[in-house]
Image 1 (tube, rainbow, N blue to C red):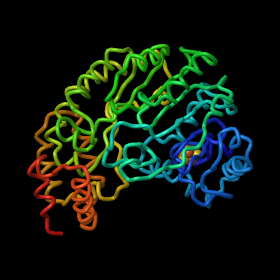
Image 2: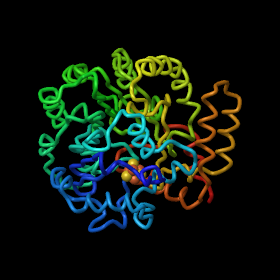
Image 3: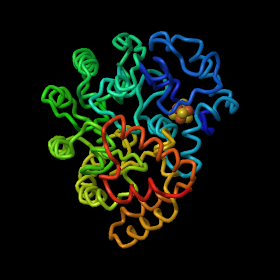
Image 4: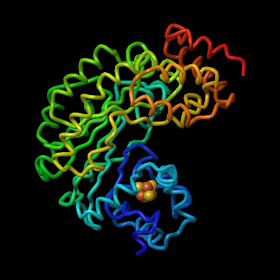
Length: 392
Ligand code: SF4
């Protein structure tokens, strides 16, 4: 059966990613979609209701059925790469959910909704379509598509709703959407609500809205602790994040940390790793509880305690900028650290090969944003002075 052949994917049939700002306002089968080489456009620029009836979507379904690798090798590159190194991919998640009977092959089962870029932080690896603060800093006025037709979609088959921003906890459009769902498609035991939050905010209205649902999964976007996270995620205070994380953990929700792997946190891993290691056991206990309750494992989000997300762009922040000598010092420090978890971090370091051009980009990028934001990398840790003065 073609459907069992890699990399056939059910996403065009059962999943929708809907963006107000990303890609100039678009709809596509999934958030991993790269969009090159498809006809007539890279991404479907238009509303979700138009997308679902479109020839664009019909064409993508046909591409999957024809196993047309001239298209799939580009559009689905991310899943293909993940699978080639033995990792789980979103394609596999969709496939498994259908194979084990949790999902059917028709109807909207997975929604990834990004109704705007309203945010209260300017993280250094982020971009204007994902943060209104960066949009303002860069003097931009991005087009935001009207996504109010989200209420016209049929949610009767929905299993997972993933909401990202911006920062969902402060975006009124997210609140409106949750209220709409609660009023019109309230199935608190069947629908998983997944959100990614920067943990700056735990306002009671947001928590009350989430508490109406019995399957909530939160991703904490925290890349480090103390002055390091405050530098990376411009505008946050570690003392506030730490307190809010504890408040969020008190709810019976699944949670995990999303850590970006980049040049501002990995060179100072000694400063923040102990915090994550302290928290691992606690997360494992919580995840066990969800496994016992037989929630669809993949739909709740990754099982790992901490997910590492490579920074690909801006290139300046990729770990390809880390010279081997410093990388080896970090690996040596890790080798003396007693935790099974450390093996994962070693793998992260070893994924990258040093490229001096990336280090030059890192220096320029750092100088530019330090000037713009009135910060000084040299105040963070002496290792950054070494990096800024490194002869490439
Ligand atoms: S294979 Fe991956 S990128 Fe392609 S449609 Fe499926 S989930 Fe999306």
